[in-house]
Image (cartoon, rainbow, N blue to C red; front, side, top):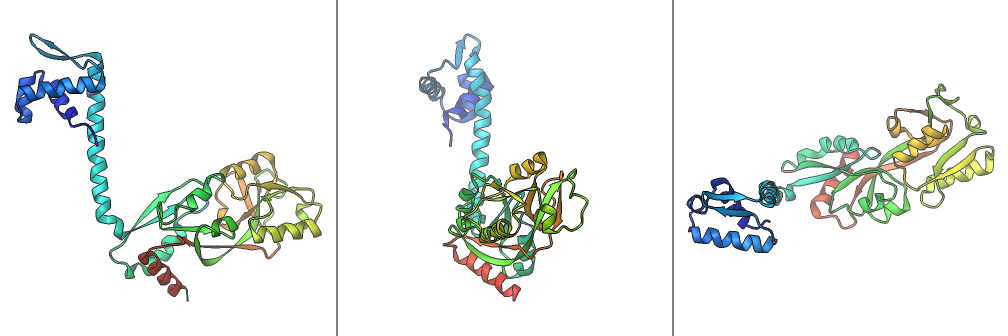
Length: 296
């Protein structure tokens, strides 16, 4: 992971002489001097000055000395982590978690079936809800993580992974706390007349497209503003800042503290489920089967 001559360099700097460093390292003073000459040539830097009283670091040498200690320590920790991974990777399920796709529903499933997997542990892997990068995250199922729990009827997502449906979340609306609708406990579609409703643009979600068609045909007094296919925090921020209305779902009620989420008198909902790789390994498939059986 790092040049072993750094160990010799640190010994020389600590001891202040080639001879004492050689004694510490159990090699000859000549070998120490050769290593130091080679290191200076390799780095093209003067690291130390030879004086009558011993060895003194140059300014460049002092910088390398400090950084070398960090590099060696970091390398040792990295190797230890890699060795630990070799021992545990086959008995660990990695579960993705984010603000909009938290791991809690997975944990509820885990405690239903974990007795069938006594040798397995869970490792939570955080990821960002970035609308520009979320497809890259989903494509890493099977590599970066074994499972995600996500709200999903996205064609783009489902082309990249398998999904075991777990249930549905109601479609709701979110508004800023100062909005005229904020104090309502329930709203009718007609309450949205004259408002700008933010929702994902057409083409990726069957549920959203069906709802959009309904609104455009039967409720043209609602202005629709397109958002990206995939929400992230910037969408919630825009809702709060513009005083628009945001189409959201019940599980996202606490995502933004400046917004209030309100149920609507309609029957629209969206599925959420258990996402895993298209070419999942045997233990992942075994876990999926256990979850299926627990749901029946």
